[in-house]
Length: 403
Image (cartoon, rainbow, N blue to C red; front, side, top):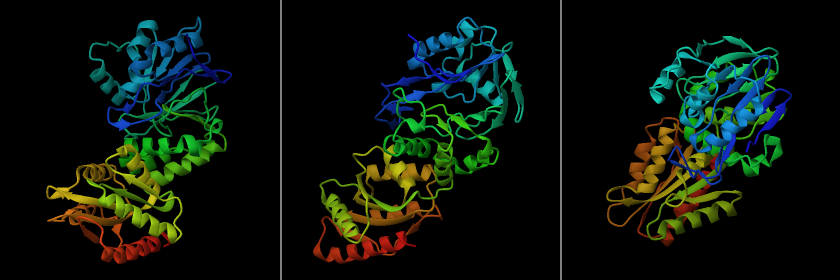
């Protein structure tokens, strides 16, 4: 049974929600599924934009068949060759053997890798940067956006309606549940965190490339944004998501605030985190967050680290190195090129407390990261004489936030 939505008189949503997925790319924990978005224009020529993941193939293909009705499919535009968007290319070809597959040379190179037995030579229509494709009342112009977040990625801009088919950009985790636009939901409450986690964990490393893509787009001409995951953006809402992307891609904190991340084997560092959180709260810091790195998804921790200006790390020495969950966190933020943040480091150890030094050495390889002046090393458990240093540290964090 089909499940489609009409966006305008000749533009339709034919994507699907995936409620079963709990690990995106088999690595990122997601709690509320994801949507695989695809779209069709019915003009003098018909055009399908991308396909969907194998887990929703049946519904996706039924959606396409329903919207096309008795019409043939003239074009399939492929923006991105990640399997969650391209898996059904073969199925589309089986049903519409005369369809022209429109994309760039790099996409077709990747297509051979994913579908080595698929013969598409007679179906190929190769486009270059800036090329146009006229469907009738709609004219598509192709914008190449390499490394947002794969090297073959491109977008399509419908010149006549101001519609941007944005590939993975401006997307988010979470199923749509019948909602279509960002204005249909309480976005800050229901989607912002998942959009941040989506961007920071997938595209976060490529801030320079995102900025380069922005230079090719004219925000004043964009009336509608159709991403490959998540809600659609229209009207005044577009400036909201553009502002978020500018901050994320330039590594600018959204909030002048602090998160405290701790790892604790027996609860001692948990206590340190609580004491420091209380001191910061008493001194006026509101809505600060404390996370256990062993019990919080790395996707969440990376997203939160992109959100705030200040990050406190509290960890034990473990076999003369950094505790595993804290090390995983550090590896992730370094891999995603988190920049322009201030860190506070508190180490712990029973006989050879070296973790604070090792954490600072690792973070110091990124010259944009800075540190509050005072450091604290706890020997096994928090002592009364440590409280004075924690008080100093809380003042330094507040001073850094208020700069």
